[in-house]
Image (cartoon, rainbow, N blue to C red; front, side, top):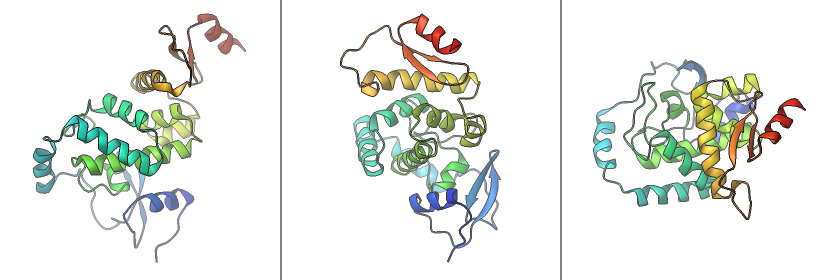
Length: 224
């Protein structure tokens, strides 16, 4: 039997394939991580198996990757269009991508997130996409379906977004949310029959995103 620590932990245990016997809290990459690796030192995931799989995974086609995204998105109830836009922004569909901060694979999972979601090899596109979508599902539920806040949390971390209650005033995060949201809206997010090519995504000072082609609407929203 494992100990029930928080509702947060319960959610992850439901999604993750890792069955923990004993759960503890560790700080990895500046964030609290719930894990069953209590007596082990957690380091960046890089094994011989990972290296070999990086070579094999580089042969997978874009079409195959998109099929994986669609299947996993359907399985977890997340819009595949959103995931595809995130991947385009995160790694440009490069399954071997590694960021300067250590984010890995096609959905750029940080080591702590990979461990938390039970991703043993972040360079395996199937594992990475599966873990990334499950993590995004968690963020969407955590922020009550607010796509903008979920995206901000994926980029800057859920603890920061939750503490602020808005999109952080970090240029990288704001650009990340704006670009993905704008492309996603063009794929029907706004549920509009006609698409105005002059529509822009504007981030208000409180972190709210407004889609509009009228600057006076932006001014009105700020001043009200």
